[in-house]
Image (cartoon, rainbow, N blue to C red; front, side):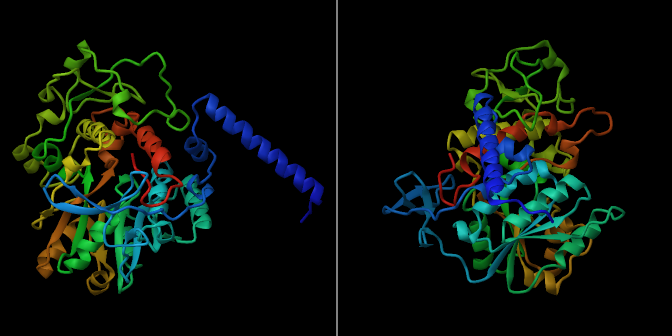
Length: 452
């Protein structure tokens, strides 16, 4: 292999540094952010930062959730809220090994989730000892991207269980065979695009405190079979409708054009004759479109979520977990971002929900490796964890309403399907908005730093 003299090495490094500076200046001039540069350049943004332990100070204060449960926090000068029962300012981690099992592959989602996972590593203030990337893709760009992540982050490991000729069930069954006893796991889908700092510790602690609970799920926004609870029962939906015409400054580029995630920066929706043509099963108006808040006093009944009622929704979703239309999911997401900006996530919260042996999605949940070793997963893992094994063992699958996370969308919500052109949620600008939020508050920042 040819070698380079020290002088040439210095010259090359200087040239690289100059090129980086030019890119950063261009990013500033064109509102092209670091996270977008990292995404398009196959650079892991979070690994470019040096993590620091959160600085904790101040006396405990009391915070009351929407369920009137009093939670104790330690206050910090920067407005950071750290749960009580801490070690060096963070929740005291249990002695058990805690591992995230991410069913992964899709770079456009993983590049956002990675920031949250690194933030939750033990060395950065969280509870995760390891992150297992369980690959369910043969797409080269996805595999290369996660290869780079696992090279950069010591706590990351990569596991290939996917065979192109297999169905979706066999890889999941093979993945659970990677589990070990005396270990607590959190299964996370790769399109989880937001999680509260305490989400992982909350569901893990609930599992430890109540070992009879077979699984403990987080409160996942756009978990299709549970969405009627969060949106209808808890009245969290806001009136939004899609923008039918492209704005003058519209840029159709998911990777390079960053948007402000804040809902308050959106213009109000204007009455349009296209509204009469739009219903709950309509196609997206155009790729990269926004959903806009209705003017003051706008009628929720005229929006997709307004057409949902508890009885019809729960009955329709009994047989499958993927029936929730993309339009309802989009309205959920924009409503969530509005509540996030206004510091109103307490509106989504409650104590505990029991699945009662009904099939539900399992996008983000805690389970014990002991249970997997004793009872090997068979068939669809959603059905296994929420119906079959709970019925067999007489142990409940539960959902902790105090730990909020966000799931982007199902295959049906993000792909072109029969009788409906377009890619559903992928034709909105929502992915840009979640990336924008993560860039501002999550990427390269330790657990416990401000999230708004």
